[in-house]
Image: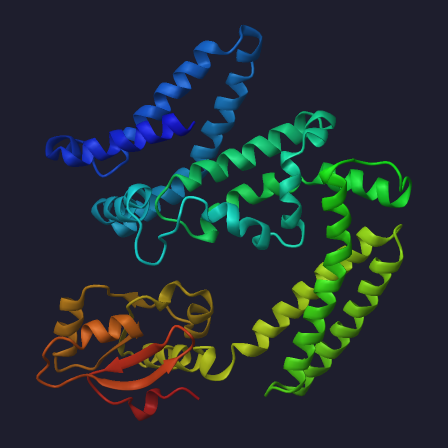
Length: 393
């Protein structure tokens, strides 16, 4: 797989170097496509005759999926036009395979380092996938999910651009493959303390069941203290206190009782996830929420003014509070031209885009009407003050 992927990426690089071949590729990863077609043909050739009977239903399912997605794809193509879609795919997909941007550059081992913490506490058991004991005892489903998950991680690691969200499709397979070790551990804890796996697997499982309750209990105490002594609403402080008490109780049960330890760890995990969710819900309020700017944009749109976004349209919470269809403009020259007109024009953009825009010379510099707000530092700027009849309530 390493040789195959390296060869396909090298082929794509050669195609990019050749101007004629690059134009002929129409902005798609031709090297990877040719390699995929060749590999598929080889697999089909080597597949036994008895197994080829499954290829028909497999192809039918794939065709059905394409037909379901086809109307959506045609509508997107009609709305955005082919040139925009081709450019988007080339910049966001093809180039990411061999060239990383500043925000998603990472070493080849990046996913192997972050996966245990992305799926914690269960992700801390991922090293058990390397166990010969579980490989021999697991069935076909265990082998399938383990290989599917780790091959996906391996292939994504060969791509230059890396972000945690890119690897999300591999998580179901990786976590499903943990089902067998967890089932073995549950039986071992509840029924046969002297049985179960031996060697390093037993030590790993034992330390995991001992450390998780302590870590989660400490996190609950720290989170509760932070909530009680910070400027949060009283309701959230009460919720944090109740969750801390529940977490400490579940941690005590997990530490003392072997038979219900797995259930107690599950309860601990749910409590910590709920606490983190409540924290985010109460933290991103006021100037950290972006709601004020979004509602102001909605009021301007409702009164008939021209309002566009450089990027925030794609934030679901921002779009929710705007409540109207909002145009997008990502061309600095077009933004400067619209700001220079006589008619009122407003645009929302992030700090870095605002700084780049203000490098240009304006006869009348645009006014910062709101912001910066949210951790993304959103600004609302315009060439006219906010009209009194279009101010958000």
